[in-house]
Image (cartoon, rainbow, N blue to C red; front, side, top):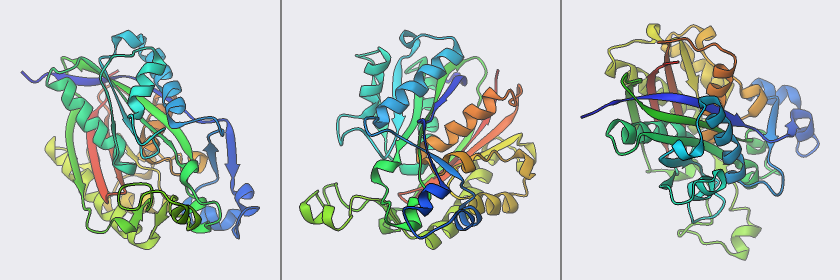
Length: 328
């Protein structure tokens, strides 16, 4: 028997250190106006040298537990969406579960880049709705500064660090309305980290040639992102017999303000319904949507029965959207 699922609590964490546009102008040939005009970004939060992705995720998880009024013992499984794991293995989720005080509980990672939270929400909701688990903690967490080349002005202005967590629990009412996911691995070079895997193992040469940093073809990503965000949002809504007019909020992946604005235009959504915090965090990959959701929740803006659409795109290339009905 399929049961319902709801979000019982949301939490987020961003490191204290701030990297502003003015700071970046001292590193590469850029300036505040250039960055703001092209990306909408003003600041990014940067992990300390001794902070790993699991450290960010653990703090976000603690805050989600507090928001839900639960203890870690109430959680049956842990899922972390990230492309910046502490180690190639074990999964960062194992470290997070242990750090929160729940060793022995099931834990695994999802690695689908910026689409990670949307994929994770679909998977974790399915685990709850099918009865496998009663409560799952899902965290999107990234320390992208660790793989950002601060000599490359086309990418170093984009990325920041942070984590956002949600606790999904069984409910008589089903808040998961629909999902649309996709991926195309035909051209990974459009957005990828070239070295460090089995294709190009780490070597002195890969390090010397800066092959362990993020590489991106910006123009190709832009066109792809807008079309996939629009298509997947409409498909997820259609599964629930809804249209963009039914949305209370659209929470897009915070990659670039121009991408968000273009998708908003094509969806014919009131810009007031679109949640944007890119100016504060930059692109935090899988953490961007739960960071924005946590801010919306903390501000008391989410009302009972609000329809929220989460939509993302990223490396893979991948994309996806989830339509959700909020239940307080």
